[in-house]
Length: 210
Figure 1 (cartoon, rainbow, N blue to C red):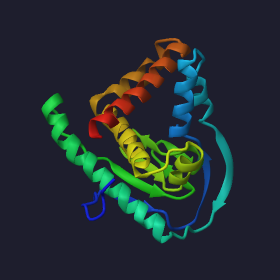
Figure 2: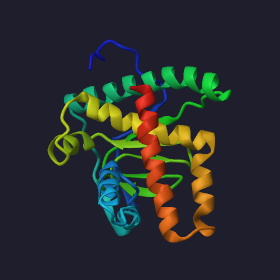
Figure 3: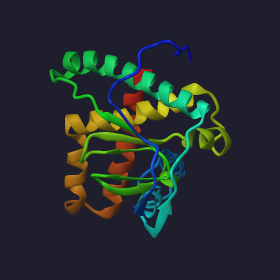
Figure 4: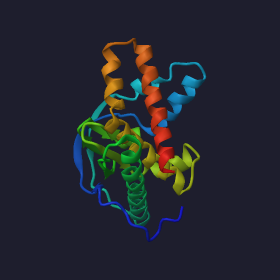
C-alpha cells in the first residue's frame, strides 16, 4: 500500500510504554475468529472456540516496552489506515443510514491492556470494545499475521483495522446490542450462530472501506 506521507488519524492513544500489573482476560481476536469461521463452515460448532477464548489468566508483571523504529513506522501506518476509514464512514454512514459517524479511538498497547470490556492480553489479538468505543491493537500482531497466518504485507494489517472499525459501525447501528440482547432469549447454539454472523458482517463492513 502507498501510505507514506499521508495524513494519520488523531484518534489514537499510544499506551505502548510503561509497565503494569494486571489480571488479563482473553477477548475475541482475529485468529480466533478465523478458526471459528472455518470450523463453522465445516459443520462444527465454531462459536465454542470463541467462547473458550474468553478465559482468566494469572496476574503478571509487565515490563516497560521499548519501541523500535520499525514498530513506530507500523504505528504511523495504522494511523493512516484509521484516517482512511474515518474518511469513508464519515461519508457513507450519513448517506446510506442518515446518521453521523462517531469516530472511534484506536489504542496501541504492548502485552496487556485495560478497557471498559475488562483486561486483555496481546495473545487474543486485536479487538473492539463496545463499552468505550475503542479499538485495541498490539502491533506485535503484525508478525503473527506474517508467520502464523501467512499473510504478509501491509494490506493484511490494514484489513484487521478495517475489521475492528466494522465492529464499531455495527455498534453504532445497533447490531451489537441486538445480538447481545438475544443471549437470554434464544438457545446457546442460535446465539453462537448470531455471533459468527456478527463477525462475518464486520468483514463485510471492512470491505466497504477497502
